[in-house]
Amino acid sequence: MNEKVGISLSKIISSGYLGESKFLTGKKLLERIVTKTNVIVDPDILEWSNAGEFILSTGYFFKDSPIEVQKKIIREMAKIKVSALGIKVKPYLKSINQEVLDLAEALNFPMIAIDHNISFNDIMIPILQDIYDEQSKIIRKVEIIHKDNMNVVLKGGGVKDILKSLSKTMRNPIYVVDHHFEEVIEQSSLEKDKALEIREEIQKYFEGKKNNKMISKTTQRSIFINGKEIKQLMVPIMVKSNVYGHLITFGINHELTRFDILNLESSANVMALEFLKRLSVQDVENKYKAEFFEDLISFDKKRIQKAIERSGHYGFYKDAYYLVIQIDVLNDIETIDKEYLAQVINKSIYLINLICKDKKRAFLISNKGSSINILIMYENDLKIKKRTMTLVKNINQVLKSKISNLHNVIGVGRSYKGLDSVYKSLDDAVKSVEAYGNYSNDEIIFFEDLGIYKIFCHEELRDELVGFYNVNLKNLVAYDLKRDANLVKTLNMYFEKNGNLKKMSEALFTHYNTILYRMKRIQEICEIDINNRRERYDIETALEIHKIIDAWTF
Image (cartoon, rainbow, N blue to C red; front, side, top):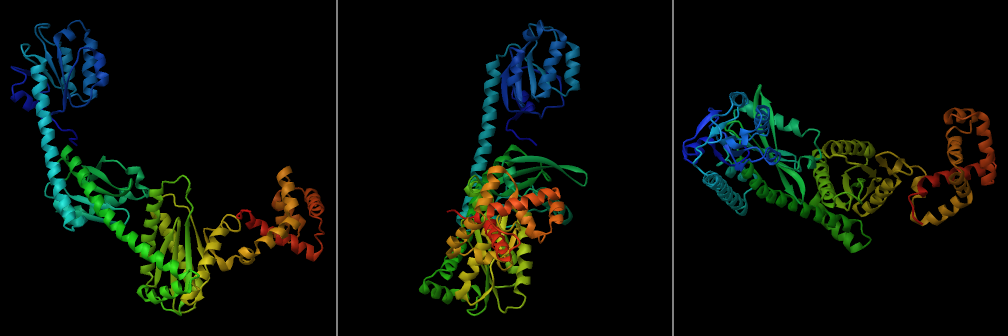
């Protein structure tokens, strides 16, 4: 790919900047592009030289240098892709050593003998002026294209219209990959089979790259279609510092140039405005849904009634059955980029929306902070849990496949009849999420499966539960923390194995006599008789409280 803007060696020669010059080597490389000029007076300058430079020197530089040093300099220039070496051979040398010339020819490196009567300034200044003029032409063309694209947007055009405008100057197929709304839009005149191959190549490239922050810069690569190498140029479409899409072109009809890079980068900025517009529409929709949901779960009867009156807009029936699913994004909220978190939430809402629409069931999705609430309506109470489990598993699978490093927990409330009972299901869903990590390690938690936790989790019982825990188990927990004695773990295993000490010994990989000793110490510290049914029930209940107590802040 010709990335840089410059002028060809043929133009430099034909313009007469070098006087009566002639190629010593590389005569077939007239179209090699020069992007800047430099003068070499010391071999160390090559450390600061770049590809595309036309380096000027004199025979004096080579006069006292050994042949191997001269050859090394030619190798270095060829390695860093210097465009050419222009050398004033006379009056310092009669000619360049043939070994050096042979090496340059073998390396496809142009060496040009320059008229020694022309000053380097008379060469460098007009060349740099021509390069500047070429760059200015491209910038002016890009500015015109940018204005055209902006006019398309200002007239209400969308992504397809911008692509159509862009295709007037881009002679290659162009693609927009929208990562947020999961679509690929193209402007192409390729044959059907080749167009399909290109789309498959794009899809394959982005598979496994769910976090597109890893490709947030302009990138170039080679692909192979039917064994033929094709250059690809890809520019990110950035919205609020995050990647929402990519603008891609392929050098199929014409070689890609620096103009194509600048053109696509300018167009990507305009495309970002269209993306932002679509995202803003989604944000407004989410806002109205969130307001409706907040009214529905409030304790203000007027707000609830107002929401019920508007419920028909979402296809809800007043006396149907309703269930709330809460998805809590557990990525490190303290360190995660707030804009990226918003992108994750919005993308999740969009994907969930597609899934629920596919199920052809009335629903509403809203979010608050890092939580997403899904209100689902069921017209009857037949197999609600089974149908919800299928839906939730589908949602969880899709989110994890589409969003990189997503760590979430899904809490599912019980179903209740009537819109005025939605707050109950939300409360269940919230408590299910809170149970994660303390009472349950499952990513999907149904409130109705939480056993005695359904009683323990109520706020009004907190003081009683804490008091019960303090009386029955607090001393044992404190003993464990101080001496690392594993007595709480042993007590848990006692109830898991129904008091079978032999099975406890096997499960804990601990000698039977050690288990006997531990059980004796547990009873001494807790001041209980494990054989007493009531005292045994109290300590087991305290253990259940212990599983959730870390989630509370006193």
